[in-house]
Amino acid sequence: MARPKPPAAPTIALTPEDAETAFYEAMAGGDVGRMMSLWADEEDVLCVHPGGGRVVGNAAVRASYETILADGGIPVSYEAVHRLQRADVAVHHLVERIAVDTAQGRSELRMLATNVYLKTPLGWRIVAHHATAAGPDDRPPPEPAPTTLH
Image (cartoon, rainbow, N blue to C red; front, side, top):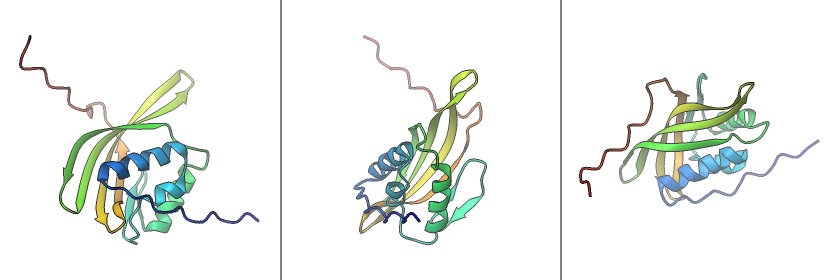
C-alpha cells in the first residue's frame, strides 16, 4: 500500500502575482502538493472548474485537482486582463490558454478565470478560483494604438 505524500511546505508568495505564477506553474507541472500549498488554510476556500459545480474546503479542492491532474500537468498559460488590489485582498481576472491535442492537431482552449488572493502571515494565498469556458467575444482588449508617431 502506497503511503500518501506529506503536504508540501507552504510556498511564500510575496505578491498576488507571485502566488498566481506559482499556481499556474504547479498546474502545468501536475504538482498538486505545491498547488495546494498556495491555498489559504481556510475551510471556506472555493473553486469552480469549467463546467463543474462549486467545490468548497481544502480537502475537496485538493481532491478535485488530484482528479484533474491524475494524468499529469496541464499545458496552460495565462494573460491578466484586469487586476484589483487592496491592502489584504486582490482579485485577478485572466484569460487562460490550454493547449490540447485533437485529431486535427494542436488546438487552444480559452478559459475566463477569476482568482482571489488574501494576504496572510504566510504571504498571499488563494481563497477562490473560478474558471469557465470563454465565448467567441471574450477576447482581451487590443493594445492601444500609439498616440504619437515618429
